[in-house]
Image 1 (spheres, rainbow over the protein chains, first blue to last red):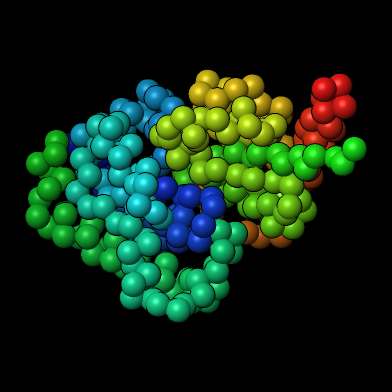
Image 2: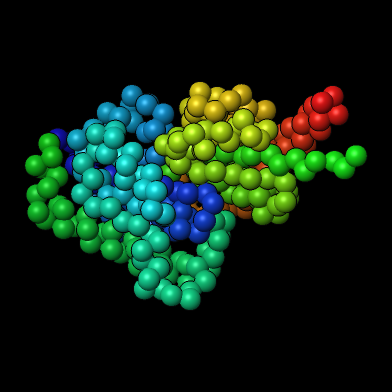
Length: 142
Length: 144
């Protein structure tokens, strides 16, 4: 299994209508590009859903963490449908129970508090990735 | 006769794997928030792709513009396949070049000045398509 294939796929819904989708998107980019670039990667959810052969080849059998903004769970459902092994599902709307009353921003731009939530979520995702790697889950998925 | 309100739907790719996804998303939000806030609607592309009849009615209910980050044109292809013919298809890489569109994915607060200008250029293209779509719809209403 190549190093690239051993990476956990962090898949965001990137919903464009609400702030939750933007938080999902930013957290996934942060973990894949900054926090765990050697252990995580992302991919376009829409491409995956258009039956792109290359995208399906990448996700098929790969360990995934999905991050959805809302309870419709587009990333989780479609990651699994495409053959991804969804080890963790995160719903941003649930995280907001810990941030009651906080103005995180909009679907266009986050406030400073919104970016703090992104940092918290990205940190949680990085820990989940570490745990998956420590448990040998990625090798087992081979 | 009172003129019926014409809303235009914009479906953007938001691709997470390349800069064009961020540019397309931000340009689309610019139309929704700033340039045509009362005359545009959107739907999450993954929800549209995964959705039921209600979501699939989107392009039949609204004149629709798709905005894609790269030449794979997920938003355009999905909309035409699942919902109906689109009024216009904007491809970010056609406007800002493949190198800029297919670069590393960007956080929404990480755009440099060039990339911010690209968002404006893409928004200009969407706005022009919006005006055309709205004009077409109004003309159709008069004929009706």
